[in-house]
Amino acid sequence: MKEQLLTEVESLMAALEAAPPSPEIEKAIYQCDRLHVAVRSSHNEGTRFAAFTLNKIVRDLGDAAPAPVVENMARVRAGLDAMGVELQK
Image: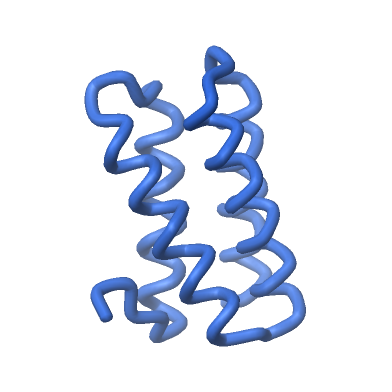
């Protein structure tokens, strides 16, 4: 389950890096990297914080978010949910 989530985070990172550059995309890339490190090291609070922040950045992009970013973020959220990571707290 953890390996699958790491793969989804890597896919999201690739989608973000392929998106047109903007300050928001740069912030999302940074948080995506933090999420990858937190998941890899099994740091629960770090995972939750990075995931919450990344999710908010992508959500706030709204219609400006490229479709691959939105699709990959949905898969990351599903993976986090499967691991029991609560983003709504």
